[in-house]
Image (cartoon, rainbow, N blue to C red; front, side):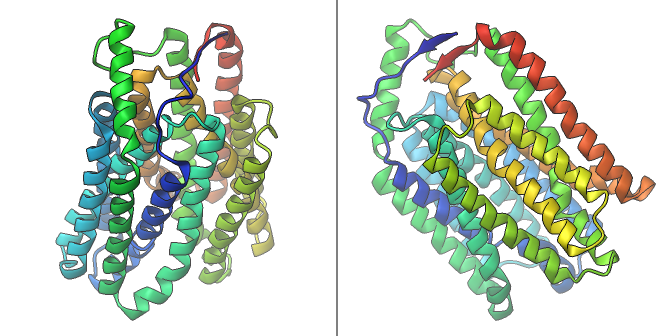
Length: 406
């Protein structure tokens, strides 16, 4: 296995400022997505099928933003791209505070999907420029910041929504404005990194455009992206169809909400442990396989769940999968990506996730309507387990031929 090392002397963005930006934006985002379905249905009297279209447009915007941002990161100076992206998101949320009727809300939510994909890809791509810490450590902490933001936002949104939806959007806009100011002040070192990256491409004879992955790296990356898309396809049903199933079993809705508090809290604990013991797993591939296996097992346990305790157990297992597999995938793909194309492939990760998010509730709904919940749980468990069957032999065949870019 060949290794190509980057310089440790490059000026880079400090990790703490990257985490601050993630924390602020994820708290802000968590003020918007939990209330969308309730607000559109109860306040604007929009049908559930139309709400599904709205959420699909949001995910489609996220995919488009991720694709474009990844390519722009590789070709242009990322500093103005991230500052403008965060500022634009803040502006959109501010406008939502005053114009949140129908169909304006639909338009704004689609645009926030676009900027979310853009900013998320930019942050992950900038994270690949950090050389002070191992990639595994960086992406674990980024995932930690995202989930602290999600837990904080979702805990507050219920109380703030009852107070004023206008205030919610203004507060979300303020958080994105803080993230934009933080980026404007503290992300300037990425300018120097971009210049050094351009100089390296010239020195090594590479074309200015992004360099393609080596063939074997690309084959493994495609395997990871397929696995990620399938996992998100099934995982999204925890956020949509599982609430209906639990209520149908006589479990109060607030108990379903409690599961997500459990999810966020456990993710934070796991990320702290992984940050403290970065070599708990032998390598990133083992971490991905472990996490994917936990996802599959969580759906197996759902087959037998009839009370809250069993659903809590399923959520606990699912959370182990989420907290280990999801941050490990961008870290490994970062190692597989050449210097001049890291943004492109970090964007591809968001695209795979966005496809799973967009079609997950629809896929689950179709299976459940035709066959019921238990057959869906079986299909989800088998589908995710097949991803392990795909990845293990693929990695075994390719690992000696991989080129890692540290």
